[in-house]
Image 1 (cartoon, rainbow, N blue to C red):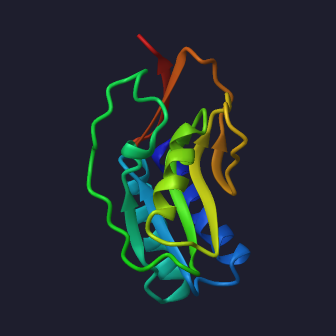
Image 2: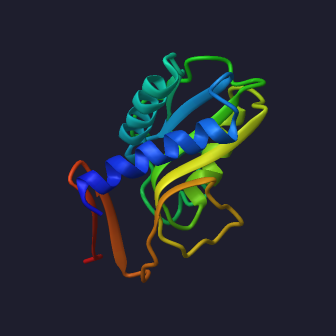
Length: 165
């Protein structure tokens, strides 16, 4: 995907989020650290432009809620900022790549430590498959089937596919 493909996908997902939720009342966008934060910011910019309002934007570091401490080094990457009490709100979690689903599972645990949302929805730029948990995105920029040995990188220049070295 080129940078303009990503921009179009974000705009489409913004419209889909608004359509599914009948606007943006009680919607809170939360980017997962670190890859989802920039995408969440861009989604909020588009939603605010479309609706002419301000949608709350937060960030979530779910590191301490992960279940794979023994498989890889775990260090908290960034601060969590939840701008409003999530209780009764519709939380849209945003991440760059959905792979096994373990990061999203950790994020679900983490968000519940702040309150009990009315609903949690998931927006990802790339769904690459290989799920290990029964998690699926509500909003997808691009389905990109990959091999496990491949790596997907979402950046300002678009989406790149490469080999894990």
